[in-house]
Amino acid sequence: MTSHMLNISNLHAEVDGKAILKGITLAINPGEIHAIMGPNGAGKSTTAYVLGGRPGYAVTEGSVTFDGADLLEMEPHERAAAGLFLGFQYPVEIPGVSNLQFLREALNAQRKGRGQEPLSGGEFIKLARAQANELGLDPEMLKRPVNVGFSGGEKKRNEMVQMGIIGPKLAILDETDSGLDIDALKTVGDGINTIMRRPDRAVLLITHYQRLLDYVKPDFVHVLANGRIVRSGGPELALELEREGYGAIAA
Image 1 (cartoon, rainbow, N blue to C red):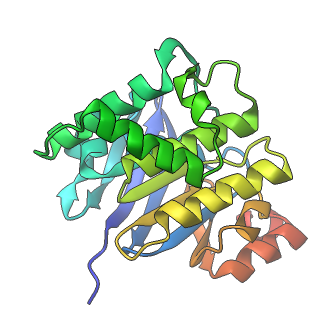
Image 2: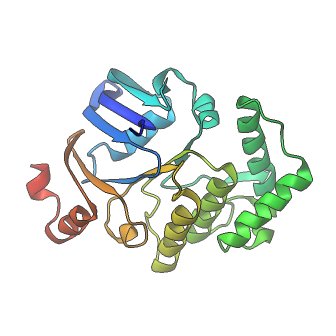
Image 3: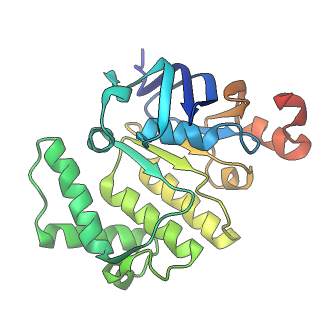
């Protein structure tokens, strides 16, 4: 029997005293890609932030385990070291910090957390260039400050390179398709498929639209409404939502 990589049980959470998540239960196994869809305000991003450990999101009930460990007891950096990657809807700009410097520090901090030796400068640059080439990012962009002056598509491509370098067990991607054109959507889809579609990795893909799922074929689709998962199914569920909207399901 396959053990769950991520097991969310009856998760309740609030922000500024307001209940947002009202009993989410979801299990993700290694090798699976799950998509969460739902109307605005349903709690999709809150789910990602709670799993990532963002401050200000208070869990009031329920549990989350990641590879059998209590995820909610871990600090955000410990969650990252354990293999969790959180991709943002709007990646931030970090002036004065080069992509290479940022990514090397991030990777070596995680390696240290796992008791591994840090990569040397030469080893890291070789890895970074290989990932950039594989995902179609100009290696020269790795020398630029993190996301500064990048287009929306370049930021997403850069984030996919970050994910490839880190090599997480579980990627939680929060509306990573927001505001992207067709070429950028394909880039994100290719990145997810290239990096994460492996038997020892998994993805929780949070999206408002079905279009990204044309490129990333999920194993399961879940509808989140009013802080709960109200329906689950296969990829065909996303097509139904695209046709009919959330009204009937979220009522």
